[in-house]
Image 1 (cartoon, rainbow, N blue to C red):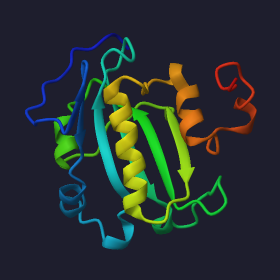
Image 2 (image 1 turned 60 degrees about the horizontal axis):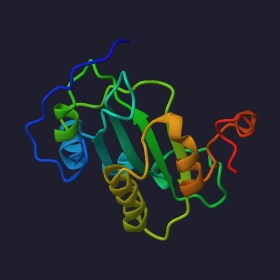
Image 3 (image 1 turned 60 degrees about the vertical axis):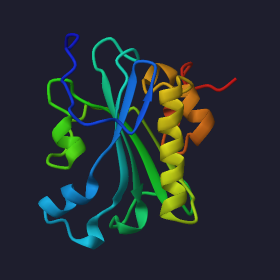
Image 4 (image 1 turned 45 degrees about the vertical axis):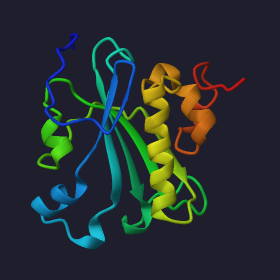
Length: 174
């Protein structure tokens, strides 16, 4: 993959920072256009974050909060987990605006950048954690790239990190 130009987005971002913009994804439109039944709408909030300084090849990320109670037999890495936050880089070859508008699903790069399970008393409390992470990214105090994974581990824990990875130099918290 080579460095990509950033595709234009006509929508006004809900959060901004120094060379960072973030849009809340229109999940209601997406769920309706794809005829997703109410009991299968597990993603409760999602942001598309443009942070071109975070990585030299891709410029944008998706940060989503899922409710685990709607997932059939979810794997819970944290006993009692109610929600899971997932951070993934977006493939720069695909436009982001249709994803933000809810017209298309995102084109994600693999593997996922970060995931953590949380125990929250409500969906609103889980969304507040997500919104705070976006605010931190926009403020420049949290990077969405995996080079800064320790920041995410410090804030949200390592319960979704493979056991064999927890002792690698990039994961050890000092």
